Image (cartoon, rainbow, N blue to C red; front, side):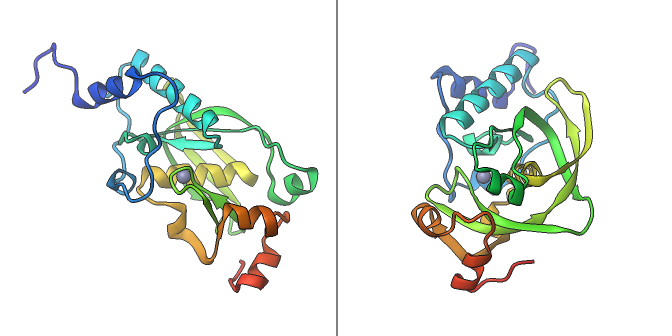
Length: 214
Ligand code: ZN
């Protein structure tokens, strides 16, 4: 039994994490925290602490740099993620991948379901699997449900690259890494992607490395 003066252990851990200031250390694949799944956010952090935690996620994502970061990637087992994509890519890539600029937003208790049957396959990477990328076939459009950081309900359809980001980050909250869904024969070091597979679509990579596209 807790006393009214005792802070919940999770809030205490987050306070400790934030005490150092600046970007948080990102957990790498192999740490069980990336595989356990997360508890729905239900007020475990008070509004002020939640706001500080979200800000730390934003700072960490931008410093990495990345286009999304889920709470377990900084060792916190809560169903919270942040996403943001300035999308600094050539027009040809933007069109092929639907990579439109995505303003910063917070996903609280997100879930997704396919919206239609179309799938899209592209190289993606993960801040918890540094140095590598692989092709993942994902739903081209999803229905995203959940809340935002102030508790307002979210229920919308998302397409293009933002749909990929939403699926990748929500999967983290369920203990799933992108490699679980990837074409493993496409696995490429960042350098190989830069040198060989920067085409707008992965068709050439599929032929050369021997994997299927949807
Ligand atoms: Zn990731």
